[in-house]
Length: 192
View: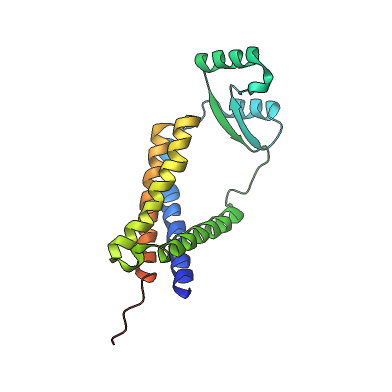
């Protein structure tokens, strides 16, 4: 169990460091995040229109309980466009995000702990080092399909943004997998 904790700790730190590189140092995500033209006017309009910290969609689907006429009106708005999603927070925040950094490290370590534990429950544990690395890397592929491609498909995330998230995840989990696989492995066979 000590190997799982050590593998999770080291893997989580690697995930966090890679995320810092990918989002702050490397130009992986910056080309996919676009500036809003006339930002100050848009922010003023949002502050007047949106009441709370929430996710807002437009045109908003009123749901089937609103009736057929409301559903038809919504469908016409969707066809006409524009459409989108706003993740809105009306209050300011510290740009250094200390709380988010701590939360990020904790989330990354917990994620790596789960993968390290799952590795101990898989046949990859007794296989080669590269097999264990591949096992860890498969979690990036799982996340890409379950999360990133789902958001691309259903929520309209742009292809460049989605691709950057997938590449980021693949690299992150392969790097973390290198460390986890080096630490979490089957015990060496004892000579008889």
